[in-house]
Image (cartoon, rainbow, N blue to C red):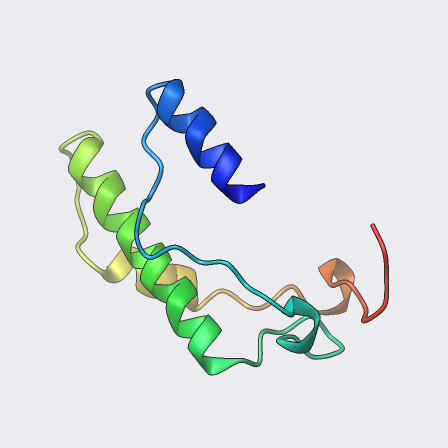
Amino acid sequence: MQNHLRQILVYLNMFPINQPEVLISHAMDRFDQEGNLTDVPTRERIIGLLQNLVDWALRIGPKCNRQSDSNLQVLMALPSRGKAGARQKGARR
């Protein structure tokens, strides 16, 4: 499904982030009961994706008030969603 979305974005002349590609297999095993990501390699890949997103937005966006990597530092300092926004193991959507 994610690859189809990428094809649609390219067709619409949008700018998807191509690397790193983050596909999380066995996602239910990578989060704790409160919905916090516990798998370090997955967390590092997501951080890499977010850094590329910030870099890409700074490259193609307006040229005003740029802050190099402090944007990602602010994003990563945000508290996790905890129980309110988390899916419990075995829950279906």
